[in-house]
Length: 201
Image 1 (cartoon, rainbow, N blue to C red):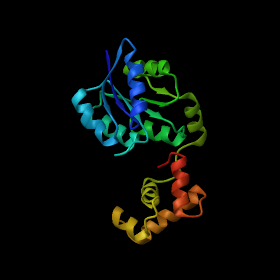
Image 2: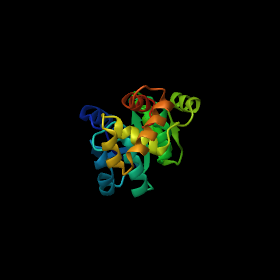
Image 3: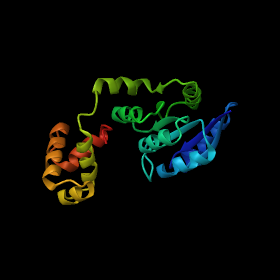
Image 4: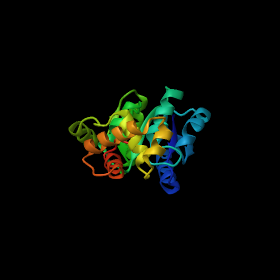
């Protein structure tokens, strides 16, 4: 029996997925969580073979949860599920060790097949997203530029960003200027929105 952890913040979606997966003879949902920061503690308790992680959750997104889970329990295979078919999300998920990346509107039979494949050591990636990710290439943002843009997304001041990231204000301005140029935006908030839409943040 393949043991599955389900992480999805929308209770109705989580319940539907659990019900449908439990109809499979060889798959059992052994634990469920609704927040990103609950994934690793739950996984340590129920020891799943596969974790299905939604990208958008409170308490940390699915990609960060995937990073923490693959470090904490390397034998647990991670499949990221998303409503947002953004190539940048796919690239980031693969970088943190996810074994699969599927959009949520995939048929459940397809999801069940994907679960079996990742347990067998294969990678399963939505074909359209894979093609789009290859076409788009890697994020143009450096790690620090992405950090600064993330901090700027809610309208934080340069001084606030500098304090939170332990950088000088001049360095923050340089990173913001570079990020704005690379995203083709006019302001730092717009740059953060563009980068988020592309899945770079």
